[in-house]
Image 1 (cartoon, one colour):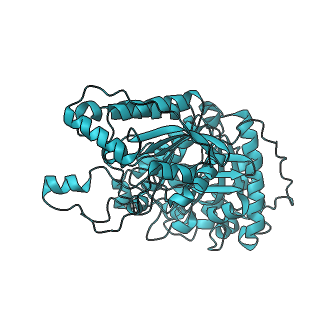
Image 2 (image 1 turned 30 degrees about the vertical axis):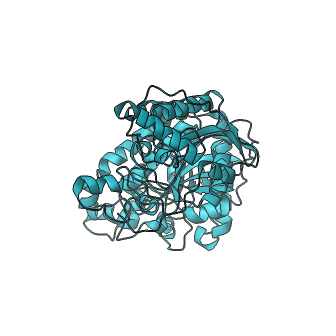
Image 3 (image 1 turned 45 degrees about the vertical axis):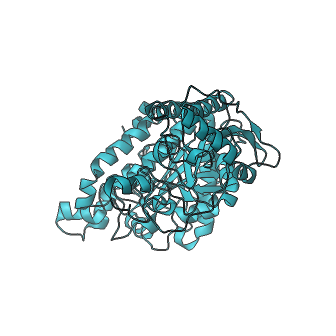
Length: 497
């Protein structure tokens, strides 16, 4: 067993008081009608009620969070360690289905040791019903947000605890599948320390953040502001007026400028141009890559799921790997489930060329990104921000609309690599870049790029002004896409014919 200090455990009612507006809680629960149980189990249930002050291990209902009506599922650990039996499962399913019928976002605060052992397999299989109800809620395009509390393990973690669009956890919380006490009993040795912790799950891209209980209402409210933003009726945003005529910058000059170390990337773009940003983290399946930034974002009033290649996170020692593309595909799924536009940003020196990348299925992930983007049932907008090397860049290109910075470019290989293939040296890289028509201006003439954002004369020399110009263009394009809806796969592919 780990000796790590664990957080003081809040009761369900204490956490409800922290998250919801004062006096707004309204319970949906009715007293459970107990099935026939043994005398010993009946005594345990009675003792649990007296100890916890509640009649089951979950409380459900609704309230206001920052004035917004939300449905809530809240675990109570003091009732038989928050375990889920048939009555608790019935209560959860009823509440989830009611939230779906009433079109409410759903907030879950599980805390549990898992399935109620006194009821065995009939309780264990309730994971199926609960998961189906959550899936149906999400299929209706309604947000499902999860706050994992200390501890959340077993069948709860393996069902409604792990299905959130956004999932955050309490600092220091024990979170995992197999409880450490069970592991030690089964295998005769303690479970390794610092594995089943909120912080470790964050480090491995399984949850999106570690958030103190006092901060959770603010984080969830900001997330819902983006997730529930209007999809229609957004004030049309006028097309930004170009500051100047687009100069015909020589191809190699554009490539060289795009490689400047001080060129603004996705982080500065969001800092200067976005009205709100909620960072997400990882694939949710144990992988993350610093070369990709995933977030919920608003540009002006226009909401989107944002996934951008982060030049700061890509290094010679850690180029963008297949994990980044799997994280990008999580963003695509979120956009589809929530009916939000998807913004992709291309800015990469190229995907990793290594045994690890091959073993990780890099080629397959590029193919799946291309397929997912072309077929996505949500509006899509691509921004070519800087370098666009190879399949790792192409993986984020297919979109309903494509915007490019003036000195952005796209190439099957770095021009030096193309030169090495054709001329057996790198000296012909400028010539190859020109011949391959890599720059944004050439791609606009080919119909691949729809709009170019001017640099005056170079984004690195005017980072804030440049990022604000790009943000204005993204806001304009997103507002139009929200009204028009997603294009067809055939239309998306036709621009490359």
